[in-house]
Image 1 (cartoon, rainbow, N blue to C red):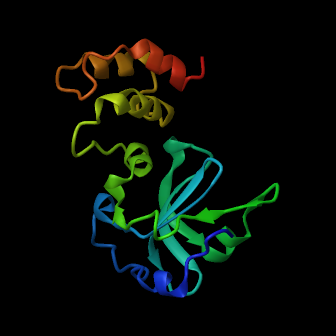
Image 2 (image 1 turned 60 degrees about the vertical axis):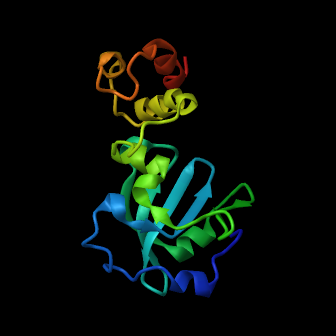
Length: 165
């Protein structure tokens, strides 16, 4: 594993079930492990081997979920000699789950503030890929709604990019 978190860093993570009364969107995410199109975000730790958090495997936002993962299993992941990585403290800051775009999009949570203009199209592409707009008509309804952050956008290039056309 690259950048394995230190014992001191691990000790700052709440124990299992310590955050169970906190809404998922407000849970603090302490670690981010990743490899390829897979991400694991850690909110709790049993102090030995078990993490609890959010996982997105193979960029499958529709099947992403909260659950448990073994630290030992994460450390053992290697794909063609490339090992899993953990973002260092200098790069990763502890933040609420709703502040992490991948978790927010997979969970279907709205942005607390509208997306910046350059980010709107990529945000919609991720939402289509995550299954939030299963049909073109659903995407069309989103971009034609005057109440949407995406009002007025052309749905055609977004749909084509999301579907790989």
